[in-house]
Image 1 (cartoon, rainbow, N blue to C red):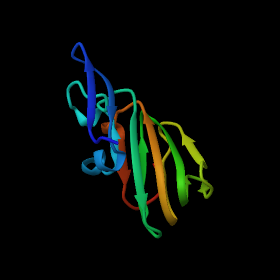
Image 2 (cartoon, one colour; image 1 turned 180 degrees about the vertical axis):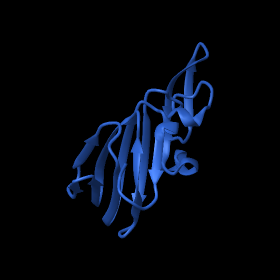
Image 3 (cartoon, rainbow, N blue to C red; image 1 turned 90 degrees about the vertical axis):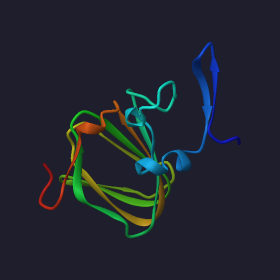
Length: 138
């Protein structure tokens, strides 16, 4: 596949082909979303954020994170990941397992086996995300 190509028609973007891993390298895996701020690029979206992430076993997000405005969906492509929520744990262990949570729900995670995860968050409001180091979820 040809990398980083975008076709236009009458100056408007129509189709883009790329690689999620390469395109997300500068944004911690996020390759679609408002934070890109690239004029006329289909990846620059206020509607949705998409992340392609690979994690080694034992990797964890030790602090609680929450988006005050966005719904989040995590889909396991391969591996095993434990998503932790206040009062609940979701173990994603089979290809296609997913967890979806609404705005305002705190979460953190631990990678049990080397994993590949696709995360979708909507709408794209990166400034609405916050993390709390230590303590309990907010």
